[in-house]
Amino acid sequence: MFYTTIIILAMGLSVDSFAVSVTSGLSLPKIRFFEAVKLAFLMALFQAAMPVIGWFLEASVRNYIEPVDHWIAFGLLGLLGGKMIIENLRIKEEKKFLDPMIFRVALMLAFATSIDAMAVGFSLAMIMEKLTPIVLIIGSITFIASMLGILIGKKTGPKVSKYAEITGGIILIAIGLKILLEHLQAS
Image (cartoon, rainbow, N blue to C red; front, side, top):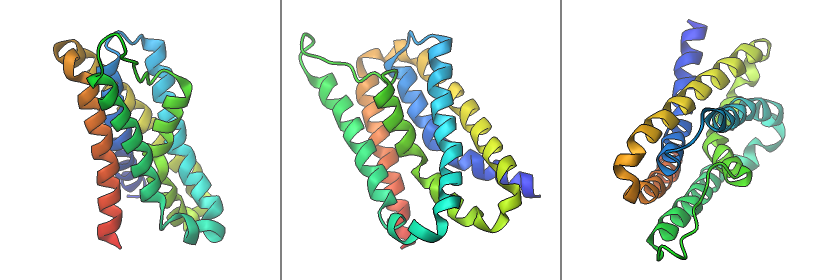
């Protein structure tokens, strides 16, 4: 029962990483396997690390971070998504590509999609002895979901290449909005 619950939790946490990975595959239809592995690993690393950080910080910073974590995720994803849309609408000569293979872009994406996992870490403080398998399951499922998302985006990218960056930007903004609305409704 414990592992079934954790697997379902990990699948829920990996949805945002999956969507960002689809967007990355759409934006980079020629992404190579090793590059996809690096991006998926970064997504999985953040998704697995955030519950640990939340677990360690539970008592000291929970009251400060929890009220604004959804705004941070919304802001980062909204900025990245908006930049993708604006860059795509520019004249072709001026167009700059928001490349998820650039480390700082990938880092921001991984961070923004994993903030909600920190809240999971706050609640995991009660089951300290089972933290390692939880982190491994969350990381593994996120890695698989991210690789699958990149593959789906890569395969559909050439068919929709003209609109790939706009679609990707809309997806990022939608993920940020979803995170924001879920937290505001829970309040």
